[in-house]
Amino acid sequence: MSLRPYIVGNWKMHGTRTMLSEARSIDRAAQRLMKVEVAIAPPYTLIHPIHREAEQIAVGAQDCHEMEGGAHTGDISAAMISDAGAKFVILGHSERRQSHGESNALVKAKGESALAGGLRVIMCCGETEETRDKGDAVSFVTKQLKASLPVEIDNPMESLTVAYEPVWAIGTGKVAQPSDIEEMHGEIRKLLVNLYGEEHGGEVRILYGGSVKPENAGEIFAIPNVGGALVGGASLTADSFMGIALAAAETDEG
Ligand code: 13P
Image (cartoon, rainbow, N blue to C red; front, side):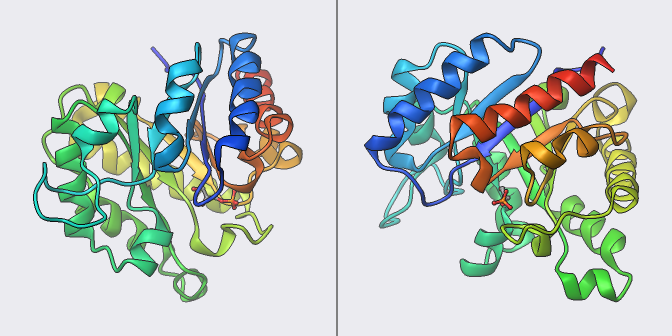
């Protein structure tokens, strides 16, 4: 059994209530594209308003704290985002690893907390340009991912997604070579099978992220072990985001 292609929009720190109309358009288009699972992770402030209106798409968050609650000014727990309507959370994004100094151990603790709170997790990994130039991309990413992933997961096939996002491809217009994506996703697949067994590890979706656009999406989705995309800039308009979802549907048809 294979899960549907998964197309997730990461709105990052973009979007006020004026963006609700865009979310509505995405939701309407997703209703006509049931072969693809479409979701968006807006800023926290838009989780509930989008969740309230959405009929098809799932809404998620871009981070959560590792603790259930307490004296953590400015932070938000898995239970809180879930209460607002989030069904999943993106964790370990390179922008958080870099600008908030998040370690693998912290990301793993967040993952455990999110799963315990009933959220699905999209776990991000990716190497810098310097690491790739040194020829260390595969060993870096597999180590980073192994150290970030929770060990005990009920039903990993459903509750876990991995997103490979080369840091140098994010927001730059540069996309990794198909052969490099194939190699990395193949290594990630091996790791997932090792950690969670063939039945689940063989099915967990591995998304590619980094400058995915409607124009390059078809080529990316044709690569083995690419189960969808985590999309930044191109997820901010329904036209470009759903263009990517359409490419996923067409590639899946073969
Ligand atoms: P871009 O699609 O803007 O390159 O961002 C990718 C990303 O970081 C998604 O999480």
